[in-house]
Image (cartoon, rainbow, N blue to C red; front, side, top):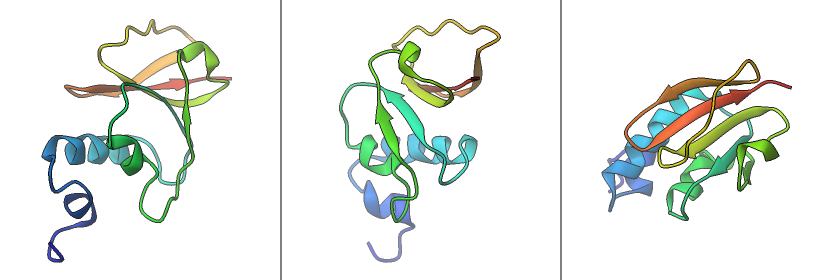
Amino acid sequence: ILTLNYLEQLFTGSKVIGIDIAFVDEHIPAGTPIYFTSERSSMEYGLFGRNKTRDIFPVDHIDEVPSGYYLASRKIVVATSEKVQMIAKNENYAIYYVNP
């Protein structure tokens, strides 16, 4: 296990979660807070980043996001607009940016 990278060590039981965290890391700068809506999962732990470099704010709806990055399960329908822009999506999650 020590020869694995950080995400592989963290999520040895679920490659899918590791892939989703890598997806988030690719599109949201390290240290940037994330607003997050999804079912509870161990993915929440990985969102904090290595050495807890991010703050995570669980919200029930995108309307609670004042501005910044919003991560939502793909099961959640989010309407885009001038204020809400989709940044990226994969099979499980979509990343949006909410303008102030």
